[in-house]
Every structure is written in structure tokens, then in C-alpha cells.
Image 1: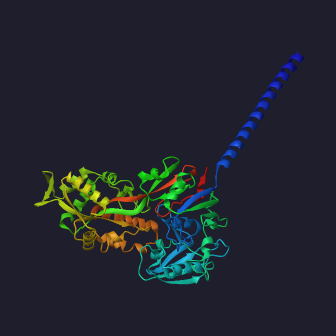
Image 2: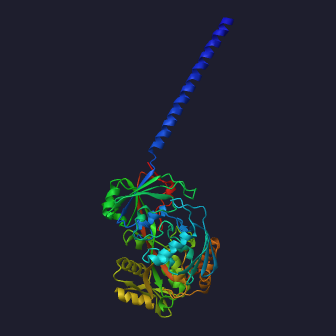
Length: 526
């Protein structure tokens, strides 16, 4: 009996041993596979980025007139203020901006920032940069940012005072120019010095090498913004003679990302159709229909509101070709100051209710009131084919709803006369908006629509005195309520630009009109 028990115990122990051996072996295999997978993942993460510049002129961003240089310079240099992907402000080398009056700004600067040669960033560098842009090199693309600056005083090493010749709405948005080192350029010919080939900044990347055909940037290990620790350690930039060469290089897989300025429908003609992604983003050029609110034909807000509701903007944009998108305001929908109350879409029923409520009677496909027919004339520059197409489509759409529109296509000189004298019912024109939330150009003072609203005038007259951006947005919402009811303008479409990037480039690519390099600290290649 005992022998039988021992026999069963022995068999049971043997089985347990087999199970333990299998489990240990299986786990070891799994760990090996996991390590191999992790090693494989790490080995496929490529930490260099390849860019191109066509028509390179200078690495000095104040001297350069090249858009690609301007974009890339934001990786090498910091500005006092930067602009986020939603066009809100972000402090850079400035940490605080205060107004002592409408013409005077006190700016506190960031301490413990090093130039890439190890020297300290101070207020002297800001003064040097501003003086250079204003006085030494008047042709800088940043000259307009500082055109009203008449004085700059260094209060201490990390405080400056800027004085303006006249009040500038949202002046802080003008402080986006790159800051250069005073010591580095001391006693140098700023424009022609060889030092521009190895220029230093305070940014996330620094220049490691410059040749006739290439520029190499490397990660700045001493970058002051420790929240941004980029995965990309090297940026290799190839210099091309022309944009055609750059497109060919992208097509051949030698460039990872580029901002393009061609009809998106024709991109494949330049770079093929495989191996890359495309992102469209809103440009700053906006076209709109401006009503002369003092003209009898379109003086009633109800009429202007009805016209707005009767336009099919999607149909208009579809007939303009690529490179355009519908818009409802100066700001794109991605802008932090945009609000959904500005949204509007085709609604004939609501338009009819507005017109009948205002005393207009619909008869024989025509709206009449007090013996008048609802009709107006749109002025358009005959040399602007896109606007001409839009004007004709507007006339066609409104005619289908009983509103008679005459499109007057005039020469550029006559068009400018109409525009300057504002002797029109309506005119199709456009504007290139800045990065700031400024809208007073169209809604207060001497504007294209001869528009005046006491509430709007009061709010826009005081926006420069509102320091809290939440409070500012709340005030703008009040403005939106007013102008949506008054409709002095109908915003039709805005231009779009595009970024193309290799499918091996990973991370969040979210370009806007200010920069294509947002979130670059999280980019990598596979």
C-alpha cells in the first residue's frame, strides 16, 4: 500500500516538474520575443529630418527674403512672442508684456537663456535686433512689424521699454521677429559677414555646418525650453537652384516634408502620386462681398441677411478650381477667436421669411416693395478671373431666388476708383489678414461698407485695453452678434496652401500660415 502511494507521489511530482519547466521555457521565449520586438522598433526609429531650400540667399533671417529660410529659422532662433497653431500668443524670450499707456510697452525677458556659443541672452540683444531691423537693414521682411517703434530703452538686463509713434492694435503680435546676438555681430558687416554661415540662435536646433550645397542643424542640448526635447537630433537641409529641383528630390525620397505653392490638383505632375500625404491649411488671403450699407439698394439689414442665406458657397468654391475653401469670417475656423455663431449655410426658407417680414412681396420671380424691385450691382475687377467667376455665380444663384443682380466687370483702374470712392452697391474684394485678432479695419472707422454700429465701435475702440484674453474673446462674441445681424460683408472663400510629407515621417503634422513645424519635437522617421 505504501509502495503504491509513493508511486503516485512520484508520478505527480514528475508532472508538476514538467509543467514548471514548460512555463519557465515559455516565459523566457516570450521575453526574448518582446526584447526582439522592442529592439526592432527602436532600430526603425530614424532621428534625422531631411529638408530642402530652393533659391537660398542667407541663413540670417533678418537679411533673408526666402520663405523656406524664414520657416526653418524658427527652429534656430526664438522670438519674444510666438504664435500657436490656433493663432493665440505664446511667450518665447519674453515672459511678460505690460502697457503703461497706449504708446508704451514694458517687456520682461526670460532669464537663464544661453546663446548657442554659451553667452547669456540679455536685453542688449533685443535692442540690437530692433535697431538693426529699423535702421541698418530697412529691407527686412520684419520691417513692417516695427514701423511705429520710435524708442527703445533698456531698463535692466532683462527689461526693456518700447515707445510707439501711434497706438497699434495688438502690438504684441508684432514681436514675432527672430532675436539675434549683439555680441556675435559686434563690429561685423551684418549683411555680408561670413558669420552668417555659422549663425547662432537660442532655439531648439543650432547650425553645425554650412557648405555651398547643404546646411546641417543639430539638436541644441542646452535649449532653455526643457518641455521640448525633440526626437529628431539632426536636420539635413539640401540647397537647390530652383523649386523644380526640390520637387524632384521630394519625389525621389530625399526630402521628408515641404510647403508647396502649386495647384493641389497638379501636385502629382511634380512629385508623383505615391508615398506621401497631403495636408491643406487655410491661408491669410480672404475674398468677400462688401455691401455699401448707405446704398439704398442694399441698405436694409434684412436684405443683406437674406442674400447671405441664399448663397451656396460650396457651389461657388467648387467652380473656382483648387486652392480655395469656403469661409464665414476673416478668421478661419481653427483660429482661437472664431466662434460657431459665425457659421452660416444656405437656407432659402429663412431668407424668404426675412424678406417678407421686412415688407418685401414675391411676385413673378421678383421681390418688390413700395414700387421698388430688389436688385443691386456688384463691381468686380475684370482682370481677376476668380472674383469674376464668383460674381457671376452669385448673380446666377440670387436670380433663382428672385433677386436681380447686375455684374459690372471693369478694368483695374476703374475698379480702384470704385473701391476708393465707395460708389457701389456691392464690390468683391479681398484682404490679407495679419496674425492678430484685429478686425477694426472692416468694422469701425472709415471702412469699405460705410458701416457703423455704436456697440461695435465702442468695443473695438477699447480692445487694446483688455489684457485678459478670455475677456477679449467675450467682447468679440458681442461684436459677432451685432455683425451677424447687420451683415455689412459676406465672406466667400479663402485661399489654401498645402504641405506634402513622406509617409515615413511620423508625428502630428499640423501646419498653419505661420509655421509648418508645430510639434516637431514629437516627429520622427521610420
